[in-house]
Amino acid sequence: MMNKSVEKSSRATTGLIELSFLGGVLLLSFTVLKSEYLFGWAAHNWKFYLILSAIAVALLLFNKKMISIGMTIGITVGLFFGNYVGGLVKSLNENQILEGMTAEEVYRLRHHPGFEIWMGIIILSIIIGFVAHKKALKNRLD
Picture 1 (cartoon, rainbow, N blue to C red):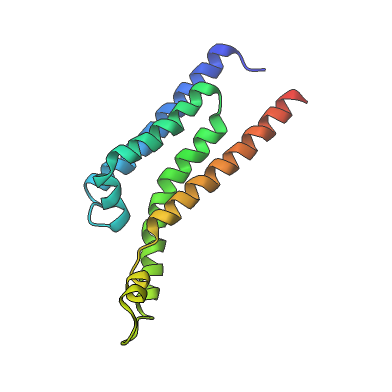
Picture 2 (picture 1 turned 90 degrees about the horizontal axis):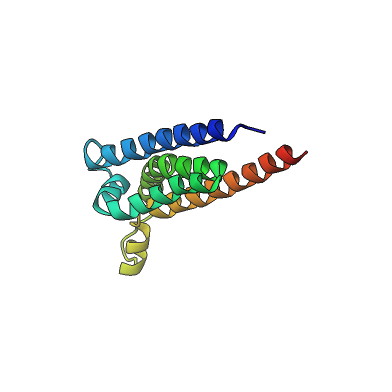
């Protein structure tokens, strides 16, 4: 079993690392990557991004380190993945647009699914973090 001061130090270090990654990605969203679809969206909706980030870091206060790390990875990696894979999906779908399609079909094929991909990756990362957390608890008890 870990010493309480070592555990607090570990949580603080993890929190600082997570804040660095989350803050760095937000900074990129406001500057270099602002012209990219999902990064521009994140910069415009920065409060939403900060709430997600606050939830991820706050999990450390409740000794949910693995879930917190998973969520942070989901937020940061998912934003990149959602932006670029979503752009690829949109591009592939736009190639299917044909003359004579309804406006609804054209609109649907022009949709950028980056946000949905991002949210899916965050949820998947939280689930993976939860499973890792349960395994760590089980190993600690054994």
